[in-house]
Image (tube, rainbow, N blue to C red):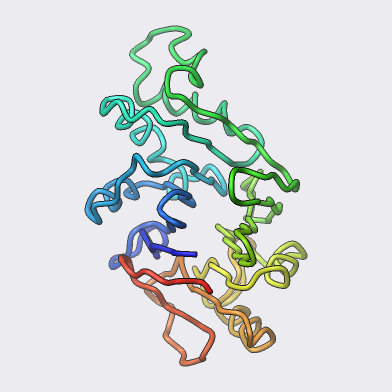
Length: 242
C-alpha cells in the first residue's frame, strides 16, 4: 500500500499545508483548503483519483472539493468519482458548489451526480466494500463539530487508520487496536475537547509498539521525540505499508 503525504499540517501552520494523504494514487483522504494546489505542485494525476474520503466539514478538510469537481469538469476528466463521508455529505457539497459557483441559478446542482459523474457514500459506523478495498467509519468527538468521522481502510492484509480530527474517545481506542498503521491528528501537546494530545499519542505508541504512528495535522509546536514507531512525515514523502 503506497501512501503519498500531500499535507501534514494544521490550519495556521507556517511550514505545512492542511493534512491529506493519497493511497495507491486513487484514494484521497481529506481535501481541505490548499490541497488541490499541493496535488498540482506534486504533479499528481487527479484523473486517477477515484475516491475522496472526507472526515468532517471544516474548511481545512473539505473546502477544495468544489474546485476539484470544477477542474475535472473543465478538463473533461469524467471518470466516476465516489465521495465518501459523514451523513449530510451530498447536501454539503451542493451547498458549497452554490456558494462558490452558483451564479444565482436555481436548481443548478439538482443533478450533481449526473453532471460530475459522482457517487455519494454517506456512512456512519458501517463498513462498505468498494472495488478492491473496504472502509469503515468511526464516529469521533471534535468539540462541537458533528458529524465527524475517522476511518479504517483495509486493502488485502493491510489495515490503516486515518483519524482526521478527534479528541480522546472509545472509538479512537478501537481504531488504533484494529489497524496496522495510524495516521493521527497531532495538533496540540495536551488533549483538549477538540484534539488528542501529543502526550497521549506517545503513550499509544509505547503501548502498541508493533504499530506505526504517522503524526499528521501537526502544529509547529509539536516536538520530534525519537521513538521507533513514531513517524514525522513531511509533504512529498512516500511510504510503503507492508
